[in-house]
Amino acid sequence: MPLPLIPDYRVDSVYDLTPERLRRSGKTLVLADLDNTLARYRQKEPDQALMDWKARLNQAGITVFILSNGRKPFRSRRFAQAFQVDFISHAGKPRPRGFRAALEQTGATAEETIMIGDQIFTDIWGANRAGITSVLCRPVALDTVFRRIRYAVETPFRAACPHGEGLP
Ligand SMILES: [Mg+2]
Image 1 (cartoon, rainbow, N blue to C red):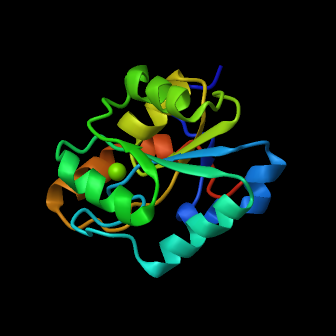
Image 2: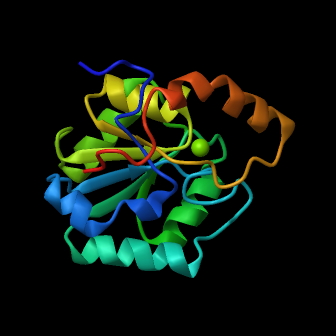
């Protein structure tokens, strides 16, 4: 049983999740947070690098799925449609409901799934509670005072997981 607020792994960005690593650890589903994980808060559509990353994963038989706490369903829908992935917005992370719904929709088991996100108290805590491998990434941009403070509050939990160590 992992400590609920400590990520299993810590990386720079989603690009550290390569098809090779995911295949090696038996993962077929990547649940990805949207804001500050896949894109900046106001970025409406994925850029080419992100599209290429997703294409490489798909070629290896790995599905990407957006699990967002965003309260503007239109934003998640627009981004997910352009990214050509399924999504759940207003997911209620860290509660297990959204995680369970994503597994049901995709048919993947918790063991086959990995969650990547930039926040301890939603993405990491939720994944750990759901029995899903948790990966913390750096926020794409800390562009408000509130986000910088939240990032500082999370520091002890981040520090408890060595950066980049033992990646699958
Ligand atoms: Mg986020």
